[in-house]
Image 1 (cartoon, rainbow, N blue to C red):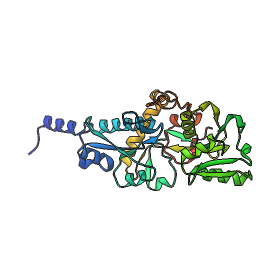
Image 2: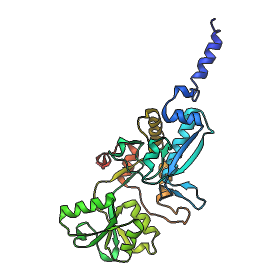
Image 3: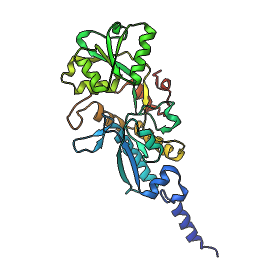
Length: 306
């Protein structure tokens, strides 16, 4: 029996509406979200100012804001404004396994996007660029890497920062006495108490450590870097092309709008919750360029300012 022409047209229009697709027409993360009516965001409790807990134990931060923009895009595409957002605290060691096994849908923090990690997970467009630099006391007048010759320099044991410090030390024959620290707190204490004359770490983390210190005005961060700046990205599952395309589109739209400046200044150039600390990290030329030409590449050369 043939349907009347008007009824056929109505049915066709309904099936073409945004969000009208059934779960069977979807795949991967989008299918999972439609079926469960929730999306799960992973965050780190102390990855300041990208994701951390505020005074009310709520996950906040620059990367969290970006993830919520992706969530808005998911709600719009699925036609489901009431999707619940679940938050799961993760660590540096379990964030990738929890993404791979399907526990997380997005990981919102300061995760470096590199070739090795891309074998296990995917990333959306880069939201920050960070390079290893050193902090020193201004009074020490240590301004360049060559000025570290013969000095004691600390870095966290097992970190990329320590490896880059050791590499430069060997290549330039600087005779640096490298002092591995158990964690960032111990490393900064070594610098603060003059047992180390410098501390090598990602530049944004150095800025956070200095801003939180008893006397921030005593310290400086080097202009010179130990290696090229590496990209940070919001992490998602591999081989999920529809969801990555949505995340890439949502982040590209955000980065092309004036709103990204508002979010950046809120978390990196203004007093932040819960203690009103300003980390004073201006947006770099390289990051501005990355926002103008969004990319999820792991290659640091892609982000060099021409």
